[in-house]
Image (cartoon, rainbow, N blue to C red):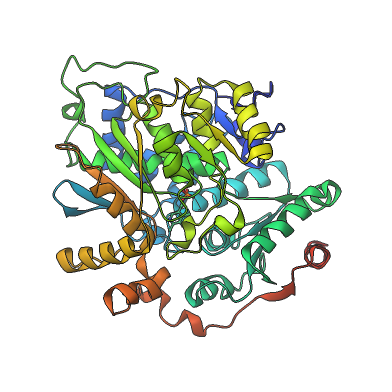
Length: 504
Ligand SMILES: *Cc1c(COP(=O)(O)O)cnc(C)c1O
């Protein structure tokens, strides 16, 4: 399997080369040359693998369709080391919870930092360690976080050989719980840098350091942001796991697994998006979305033939994506137009993974993708596909629909879900449940991805319910642990000096 850039660059690369890289040389994002197709018998085999051998084996089988430069035995071991009940809390790793008739929550937030980013980041940590060791190289990850990404990266990379993390965050602006999660880590390879400024200042510093190519090369600076293909690929797996759990047969099949094969005559249509298995059971997914990373993995699963009816994109007040799917206009927001909301991990001004979908939507035309994301966006901050014949295909052929949820919806949904089902959901998941209800279809199970646990956003839960959410036992009293953090002004030179001191 080779990977190409969405902007038409002629180079083709193997998985491990793009693993440690960010953007393609032309500024595009990496995608596989084609999507491997899962037909009826192959899906039945994946079902058996999940039921009989577990999530790690399912992950291995899907990943091995995309990774041909890690020996299978090694890749299987990496998956087995990553997806354990100890790390993710249950043997199912991503259990489904029934909420109401036809509606399920898929739990993606039982990893070390209680948000879905652990699902991919934990694997990335192990892949990085493996590949760096193989190459005899070091990597210094420099990032900016407003909360979830930074902690997921730190918990994935802590104690890993060959990797250091330098994570900037806006001083005093993360929740007490988020600060405690990150700053209580005592691992020597993890460095917390609290910047006296806002999140944008942190991002600007990361950009400035990365743009100093000599510094970047000398200190082996890398990133783990959401455009990394390996993160996206890891996320594809839980769409399969959600599908398998929501459809029949649910129990492990006894004996040879033959009974889990679909009836004869099930059709397979290769290369057709939206589940080639015309007579197969279908499900829909609703995904709380910001940078379009999570739901883009759903798009990849659907392109592989997983029988997904709809991919419902749920946004908060920062509705860049909802606007596109409703109108065909993609409009990047300025900072004055980017709202601070009670589902803060979706507070984005642009959706950094969206280019991948548009590339597919435009028939994989790299020149047009370049014209839209390179030229038009930097010049006008927007592009308009409303009159393009491809635009209606986003829904008709690719299954995308969307909706928006605001603070009042979030509170009402959290309250309603608690009162009717005794289940407390976090603010991002609440955006998902709200939007999912508007898109329910008869006889198609709707799976809402639970992207965080409520304890991470306790303030809003208290506002909605008048009581604090339950705190998992392992997080009791973390706010009182000693903190390891360096406070610094928003000054590129000082951040560079700090990195230098801790690398030499
Ligand atoms: C990151 C995050 C999201 C948004 O995911 P994208 O991949 O950026 O669309 C939603 N909810 C939570 C809790 C997150 O941490």
